[in-house]
Image 1 (spheres, rainbow, N blue to C red):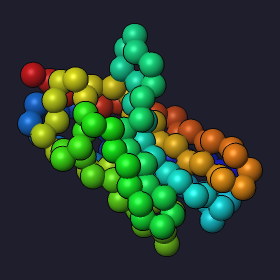
Image 2 (image 1 turned 180 degrees about the vertical axis):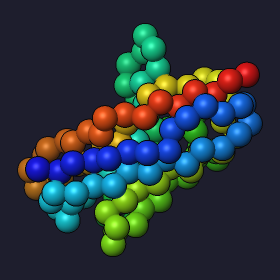
Image 3 (image 1 turned 180 degrees about the horizontal axis):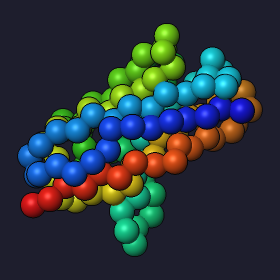
Length: 117
């Protein structure tokens, strides 16, 4: 069973930066894709960025050029560097891990990101 622990959320002014971290344990060696999703109040959860175990990345159009996802396979950790933050980036950010072999999805507990205008 994979466990995901997130950190790094907080309150920042528009134009500022934050870095989120997510560390996987308990079978993390079998994870194929990790990523970040977010959910704003009254909205559906949406993809922010993903990274495969081979390093291939994918971004939502709304964050391209501002956010960067990266991974440290040795530490089973994925990062999300968020720059030029906007108030519309305010949401709870969730770490996700996906295992192709089992088709199982795992979620972290979520971390709040608030961007003030």
